[in-house]
Image (cartoon, rainbow, N blue to C red):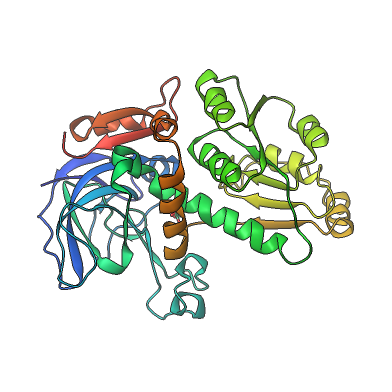
Length: 350
Ligand code: BGC
């Protein structure tokens, strides 16, 4: 069967490769791979900047944003042939650390976790794949192709969970959120913010009519431009930064207000200089009881929250997030940036 592979550490190694059809173990589902989504991490993988092959192998099957249809399920698994599912990305470390032992592998303490399609485990970018029943999430069949948005939604569901947990350390009754970055993660964060009844503001670096429409369709506000000014005007209870841009982080930290919760989702480039006045910023963070929380990955609870959030969303709105679908045979094209792209998806059966 065909799979989308890279050679970790080698730039531009992405290829469609023939690999053996997987054999499901007793506790595994056999799944027809329908689609995978492509994100910044996949671009880093193909850039040779990130990623690890399974031990003893040279190639890694990529694809961590999955959508599949169950082909065979063990009796008593709770899954049936034909179920639409997504596969959880991370697996607990083998030690395991206390967090992994408690099912919170997204909070792994020793870094020895593995991730499908990223770190030492083959991903879901193949015509067929297997997954342990405990790491498969059943989707509302009405989601159809938009079910491929599950993985980024799980990351966002975790972020919201973090924000409310951290905010809940004292009286917390938030009314507004500023989300910086209008990519897939930012827009899904806006969706889930709206579902929580918040006034949602999305700040994008440039004018994008399709993103503006997606935000206003949610009842939110779309902004372009001066982030410090927007933060000063809105005075949000919550800021979610999806950009990984250090200048943006500087703007956010220089604009904090009392009891604000700032959640960071984007990966920063350590080479990116900021020229931050840390003494002034640190003082303000203390005086304002500001909480800054980083968030990565998601555990099974967040995946279930994501499945519920997507099931409650407008189907047309979700479809509009997927701006391009390319066949597996031309998978490389999914890694190009095209005008108007939001989420680009690879069809694994074409
Ligand atoms: C994925 C996460 C993963 C992280 C680090 C992100 O792109 O969405 O599931 O934990 O990369 O590998």
